[in-house]
Image 1 (cartoon, rainbow, N blue to C red):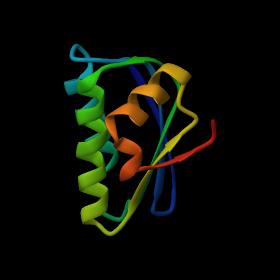
Image 2 (image 1 turned 90 degrees about the horizontal axis):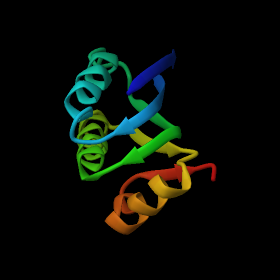
Image 3 (image 1 turned 90 degrees about the vertical axis):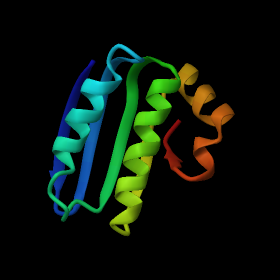
Image 4 (image 1 turned 180 degrees about the horizontal axis):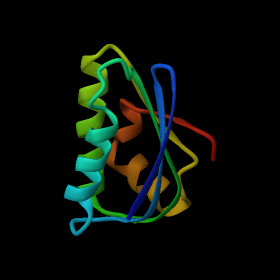
Length: 103
């Protein structure tokens, strides 16, 4: 799993590359939290276009970052999820609290 982050003002865009599963979830969570350590980051977009696989551990990572960003009064957005990841997020109800942009 690789993360590439860019920041513009109070917004952070992080591209996740590879597989987000129980083997990579802890490291991914730690890296995302490092990006979010600065509390002036209010909005987080996760670009999932290069995420080839995700299991329930990945959902936990996303929900945890949602709670963190929501607690700051910001928003978390999922961008361009791969079809298999999109299906998992839809079936799990994540899109009930997190907005999806792109196909």
